[in-house]
Length: 341
Image (tube, rainbow, N blue to C red):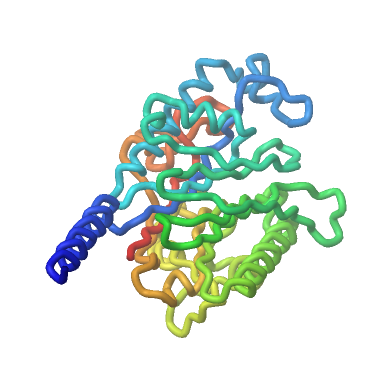
């Protein structure tokens, strides 16, 4: 009986090791601003007139299909990274259908990605959403948080979209995807919108971490601001070091990359880190053993995603530049973090 029990225990250990080795005890969590992924169908409730066959961008089915192919190529390459792509937040998508078309492309269909989408009231008609691997991530709950800017009752922007789920039957993750207001109209005029967004994100984080001490909270998105900005540092409260980090604190690993001249977006020949992934202390210092923790953060850039010539040489190869069709991928590079057990 003793030998039988030992043998059964050995088999269990071998099975557990094999299962762990299969995903390498790693997971990739990413974010990608895909730059105006619109379909060609007129939606009277959205400002999509540019992206119609007779619109200023002459947005045809051929261009739409090429756009899907381009974005699917990037995501498929991200999925090849060690650990595999578990969750990818996305922004600048028109509706759920464009994401369903995206995951049905030839490159992404074999991955079996699912869509978690919420229709925002944004005036420009773009939303934030998630793609996720259902074999690794199980959704528990979702919640939308409207953005209100004090003193600007007519201001309407993207909601902040919270998805709660379990990664690899091990960790509960609380992932908030954002697309903060842009700098249109200038820094001073537009700053209140990002301050309001940072304040709202902090409230959501505090709400989650108050209910779930040591919770693993991830904020991601195009924040339209660099890691050292007022909205991110003072109002969101994202720190740039892990020393003395508590479970309720937020840490921005993109800060060092930005400091070193690395960015996700190029503007006037300088790199900006507008795309951020910010995490709670519970992911840096997990409370329990054999659970996921943060290891490193990166900007995902491959040679095929970069403009090779002209005035935008070295920039992300975007779809449109100065209103002229370029046929590229996006004006942003994706960003991602690596989690490991």
